[in-house]
Image 1: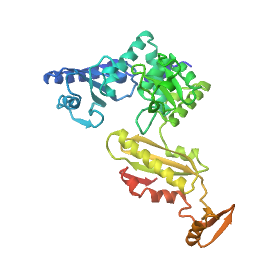
Image 2 (image 1 turned 120 degrees about the vertical axis):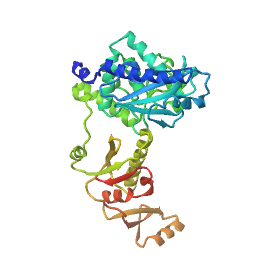
Image 3 (image 1 turned 180 degrees about the vertical axis):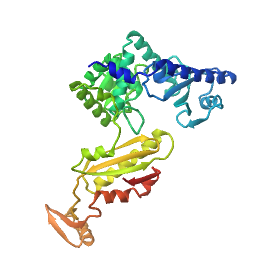
Image 4 (image 1 turned 45 degrees about the vertical axis):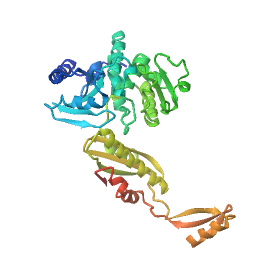
Length: 412
């Protein structure tokens, strides 16, 4: 397939973007100089690597501090340089900051100025080293820059992009490593199409085929293990879950069978399309207004609501066909759960203890008026609390567990 049309659509105005970011960095470094701090602000992430996509609005900026400053003071020192802008402080293992200017969202991250991962105090200290590694690989093979763009656009369209806990997909760092490891976008898809669970990617062959034996067990719980070329003790794909792993493999296989530009276009979400897809089933749709805050935390709460609803519906014997949620904008999310169209029977068989257990059989009989024996156990026929899945969902969304996790939730 000729990727020129796709690249024309996803390549940004690099000079324009670099000019805007450079202007911001100049101002920020001016503020750092005024404070007489031994630190420098640099671009990070896809901006530093030149792999960002058209329409990307998130810009990573690292303030690299000299190691003479105490770790616990780095965030406050960074904050002292941001007073001329309106910013938001985000709490984390080391606090960082968000600044929105002219449509761009700058993430200002304080890190130590280090040259090896052994010097890192916080995992974010290694991020500039990741960018340097990618740039070195691109220098050897310039084609990789656009291949990384293609991989990123493909993952975004497939909805498997993002390491956040409410997504648990492919991080930007993973996309870089995997595209570089396989030598290009199409080569990556060909390799991924035959992945098996616990697939290991070890760029430098550090563990000589013994990665699963030698890495700490806590590092190999994900279905994909990508040895970080910068920090070999780390699994760069620890965030990915089985769902996103399987979905990516499926999409890779489909693309290789029927290559198309459509694989690089994220489809606009529509609950109508979900209902069409599952026209022979019942689709329970829910409109959600999330709380404001850090997207990772807010999104995780929505995921917990979905897990709770799924669990309770299954506990009440409703057969779950599919479920998911979409977050098209910060103010609104949509969740759906697909179940059988038919309501459940009004009564159900309730299993009791073995007839040999006379004490518990007697208790069972006291609780249930009509009982019978089958296969050496006592049973009763009882009324179901809920026979309609939508009515159960309507009850569940009023519970405290749900209300404390989302601002508002209603049946659509």
